[in-house]
Structure formats: structure tokens, C-alpha cells
Image 1 (cartoon, rainbow, N blue to C red):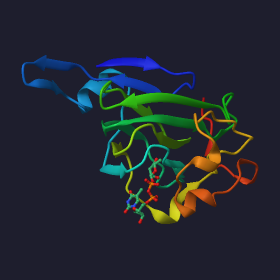
Image 2 (cartoon, rainbow, N blue to C red; image 1 turned 60 degrees about the horizontal axis):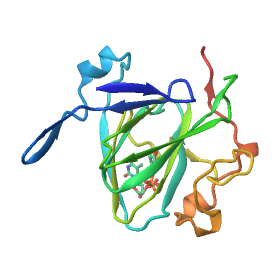
Image 3 (spheres, protein in one colour; image 1 turned 180 degrees about the vertical axis):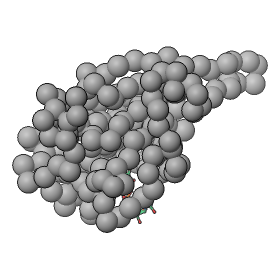
Image 4 (spheres, protein in one colour; image 1 turned 90 degrees about the horizontal axis):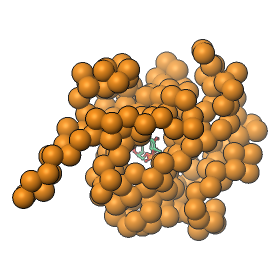
Length: 187
Ligand SMILES: Cc1cn([C@H]2C[C@H](O)[C@@H](COP(=O)(O)OP(=O)(O)O[C@H]3O[C@@H](C)C(=O)[C@@H](O)[C@H]3O)O2)c(=O)[nH]c1=O
């Protein structure tokens, strides 16, 4: 497993080894001990799988507030996405800053997103499936979102906001200026 840092400390790219043979490849996509060796000590409790039929589907920007905040380990089973994280820890030197990483079924890259960050993605291909682990269960009462194309965030999604395919929840998400973060930076 290779590990790369991103421009947002805490958000990391993990690249599992692929063992190729005549049939294809084999890859350990998650191994608790391997992640511990990379300094990522997380107990995942839920696996999620979503399909987006079109390119240009945006899901996000989402978070769950404490006591159900989630670390996430995201990968792509089919297709490709631009995966986005935003630091929302009050007092963080990176507060409001974002990073975007292209991950695909082909490149096998994964993104680790800790608690205290918004998460979202845009699909780059039709029939894109993402698979991700979370360190806490789904808790609708703690679920929150921020509008993906908020000019105060200035995220480059690679598409015009009015072309994005969104859920009603994400289309009507709050503005970043109105957002009261439940997370604080702990150094
Ligand atoms: C996230 C989630 C949703 N659901 C339900 C709620 C709803 O009926 C349906 C679709 O939910 P959503 O519209 O919130 O799904 P989606 O927009 O795909 O939400 C996801 O987006 C990405 C960016 C994340 O980071 C995830 O944590 C999650 O928030 O699935 C669960 O049952 N369990 C879950 O863990």
C-alpha cells in the first residue's frame, strides 16, 4: 500500500498493491493492520456502495456531526470520480480550503477523509460506482450538507454548476457562510 499526502493535511491518498496475472489482478483494498502501519487507526463499521448513472452527478458536500462523525475510505469500483474534501474544523489553518483527487476503477486509488471534513464527488463517467467504508453508522439526525458550488469555497468541479445532476437535498443545501461547524481543530 502506497500513501500520498494531499494539500489538506489529514486527507490522504492510499494506493493498494495490485498483483497482476493472466486473469487480471488481485488487490487487498482494505486491511486494518496495513492502515495501522500507515498511521491510520480507524475502526470502520459500515460499508456503502452507490451507483450514479450519468457523468456529472454531484453528491455532496456532506458530513455527519458528532457524536456520529465519520472517517471515510473511498474507492471506485466502476468508472471515475473527482473526489473532494473541505476542511471544516474551526481554528484550522486550512479552514474552508479544499482538495480534489481523481480516483477511478482503473487507477485503484483510494481517498481517506477524516472527521472534520466535508466530502463530495462528481462522476466523470456514466455508471460510476463508489464503495466506501465509514467509522460510524448512518445517523440522519446528524447528517448535514453545504452547497457544492458555493462561491465562498470556489471548488473547481470541472463542470458548470447548472449542469450538475443533484439530489433535492444537495440542490437546497446551506451556504458556507451560514454553516456553523460542529468541529474544532485540535492541532
Ligand atoms: C448515506 C446513507 C444514506 N442512506 C439513505 C438515505 C436516503 O434514503 C438514501 C440516499 O441518501 P443520500 O442522498 O444522502 O446519498 P448520497 O448523496 O450518496 O450521500 C453520500 O454522499 C457522499 C458524498 C458521502 O460522503 C456519504 O457519506 C453520503 O453522505 O440512502 C442510508 O440508508 N444509509 C446511509 O449511510
